[in-house]
Image (cartoon, rainbow, N blue to C red; front, side, top):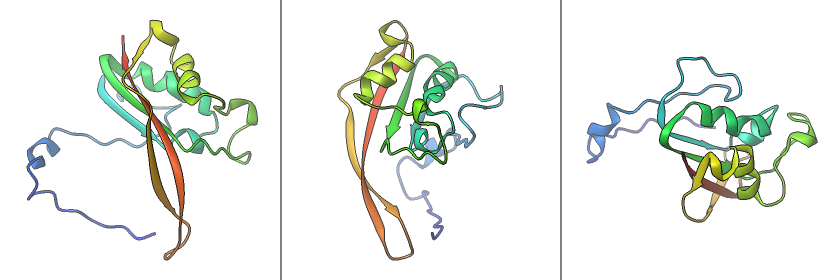
Amino acid sequence: RVARAVDASAFPWNGTRERAYFYQADPANMHGHMSNFDLIVAWNVLERSYRPTAIPAHLLSRLNRGGMLIIGGHFEFNETLSARETWITGNKQDALVALLGGAAAVEVVGEPIVLHAAYPESETNAKLKKLVLIAVVKK
């Protein structure tokens, strides 16, 4: 993989960049200071976790009331990373909403978002995968 730096100073949203924070951590074992977020985007996180079914509730606990969680991925799990019984299967939106505590805890925003993303396999080849993301607001 090749790292690339992007200069955002010419874009109209450059001022917003100063107020935004990026964190990367194990979502099932985050430090206490990582809380009170208004927006959490977690895509391609579930598939890389040792306990995918534990992640949604952990992320929701870090979100402010009224905050939005966008979560999902390609849902292709690997037995070397996680046990089969921790995989999210079936209707992904229903499964994720249930893991988040159901309708009492979150409100689904719109329909699932379907994207296609290229996952690099080498410097010259990539595999296309279908991603499904859902957006929920914490009650």
